[in-house]
Picture 1 (tube, rainbow, N blue to C red):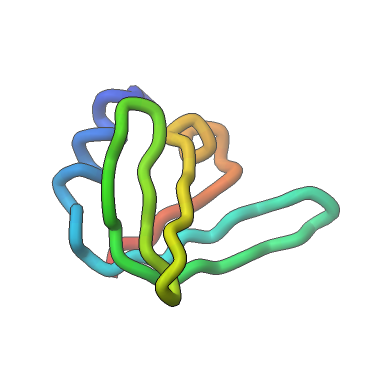
Picture 2 (cartoon, rainbow, N blue to C red):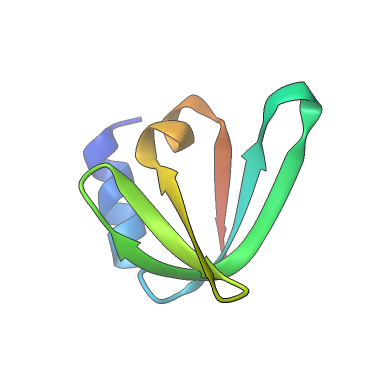
Length: 70
């Protein structure tokens, strides 16, 4: 995947609901449901339960996180 394509896709869906699934170490999986809040050159953030969570575009490329647009 191309980083520019991912960045454009996420910027196109700003202020929309998403579910971010984070695959951590030792088979730990976290799900965050929130709204795409801001995008930056290397990261994007969501608001989930009033808390801002930030993720890297590279995490999406490597499969460490998955994004589902609602």
